[in-house]
Image (cartoon, rainbow, N blue to C red; front, side, top):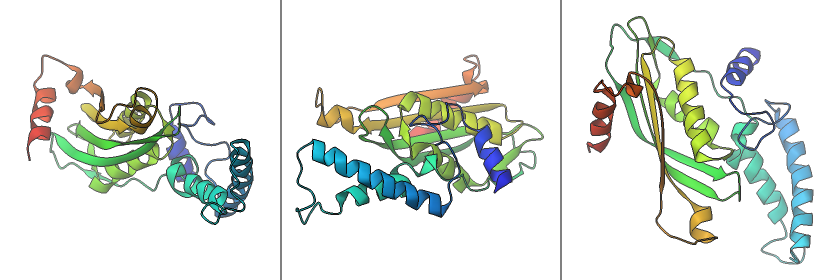
Length: 224
């Protein structure tokens, strides 16, 4: 755990305690997480009281404060409390082409209104001559680890990019693209349905516009 904790902390790029960062005391034990659930449930009950909701006598809402607390600690914001699982890497055996995983599912929450962010992430990188490649599912785990928090999409894109860049040591380029819809746009404020946001973070050969690597990735993403 200590090795994995140190490794996970090294990937963080926002201040501890922020909604899109790890919580103080990270990583949490099961006992600590259940204690947080108890405290958060009590606080959420008071929140519902302030909104004039008679949740205690409503059979559909009587356990809502605890349901909400459990959802945040064990699911919606679990990336703030659980260390990421170990990352396995392998020698590239001389492969120096593009590695691309596209359409990685993303489920997150905006830091502003705690509304759902849903979309997909495309990740590409090129291992160096002596570099390693990572197990394919680990890219999904990285997306899930940073996504399961409060987030702004711009910072989330950068966090995923920086993690790939550090984990794939010796790479010559990393490219991350995120396309997502924000429920806070469709259910409040302007209330526009169907609008999506796209963000990208690139480095190495992907940031060099005299190279064709970036265009090659974009063409690969278009392929069915």
